[in-house]
Amino acid sequence: MGERKLIPIVSAADNNYAPYLSVTLKTILDHLSDDYEVAFHIIDDHISADNKKKLADVISNHTATIDYLEVDSELYANVMESDHITQTAYYRISLPDLLKDKNYEKVLYIDSDVLVLDDVSKLYETDIGEKAAGAVVDPGQALVHPRLGIETADYYFNSGLLLIDLNNWRKAKITEKTLLFLEEQMDKIIYHDQDALNGTLYGNWYALHPKWNVQTSLIFERHQPPNGEYAKLYKEAVRQPSIVHFTGHDKPWNSAEYHPYNEKYLAELSKTPFSDRKTKKDMVN
Image (cartoon, rainbow, N blue to C red; front, side, top):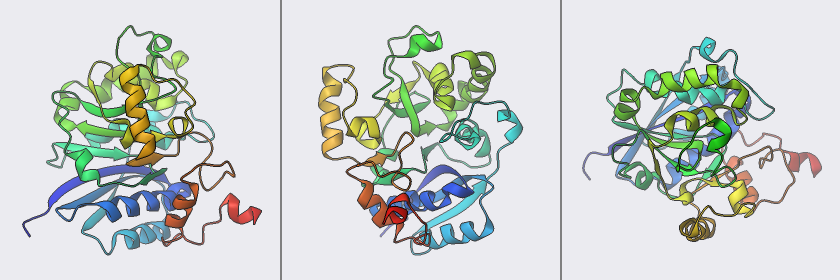
């Protein structure tokens, strides 16, 4: 076997989300081709030393490394938060700055509330051309750019999965423009960092197949696809998702709501060093 190719993958978590981050890391590695290895970079919002040790245990039997990135939280001191979106979610905006000492051409950002069911090397190798990022349309928000004061034929994407071309992102000054959007357009923002990224990246992102970010609203078919092509793509994604993204308030660990991948998610959580984590289901039983 030749030398493995490196995939840099970034996620973000605070201490409360560390157990769920472990499922993201585990399921990425469980499905990864043997031709690849992973350098995990975790945007660290006060994850404890004990939880970092558990996360290290998750990757210990794989060809992978893990390190932690610190963000200048003052940049995001005034951002809007909610019960399931904390300041940590905004930190991905600074990701290219955090990795400036690395020689990466591109990086994969994945939220910490996902279940990976496919080999992400196939996603990483997607050619996004001259775009700054690849992403997946948000089914419930596809046509909301007018709310942001923007006229464009582009669709609105979900920011929980981003394939970032670091050179193109830096060249287009996406971080600086997104921070400025947060500062100047706060009255238009409902969906936190995602609104700000869409307010900056429109016309400069590549649409990935929806199977790479199968959001809860797509699983439950809560929204009409934006066109006929997406009707076909959505069916393919729901039939065979590559990454299931538990968007919204209801997560496998805090909700009794039926979701077809809840049981599989909790089974994967039980195989991590966080297996003693109490979920709503445990409390009900």
